[in-house]
Amino acid sequence: MHGGLWEFPGGKVEQGETHLAALVREIDEELGISILVDNLVEIARADSHDLPQAEALPVNIVLFACRLWHGQPQCLDGEEIAWVASEGLLQLPMPPLDYPLARQLLAFMGQEAK
Image 1 (cartoon, rainbow, N blue to C red):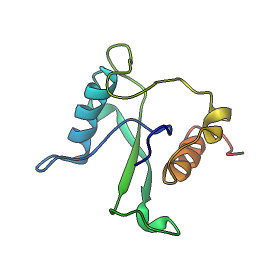
Image 2: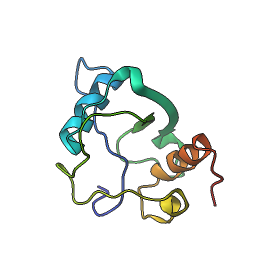
Image 3: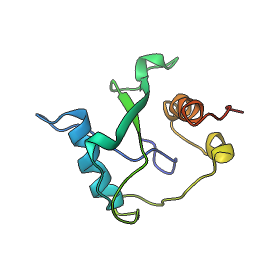
Image 4: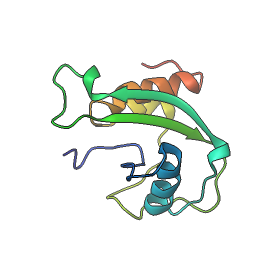
């Protein structure tokens, strides 16, 4: 649905899986790195009901910060991966729900969204 746009890594929660277990699995599948639930901090949430025109399917996104992981991030399940400086984050073409998440991420980092 949002092909070609920049998105935060992650994905769908499978049946019987917690949000945190899904994140650990998705990060391993997409980036090839191992993270521990104990190193995750929830920093933002966005919901498709927050959009002027709701997406076709209800979407709820929870954004976590993780400052400690094992391995080198690599693009395993996507088109491209990049480290982006905070001042360039909101300049990326992203799906509508990722912009409020990006603003909350910048606030978490002590940066002002511009």
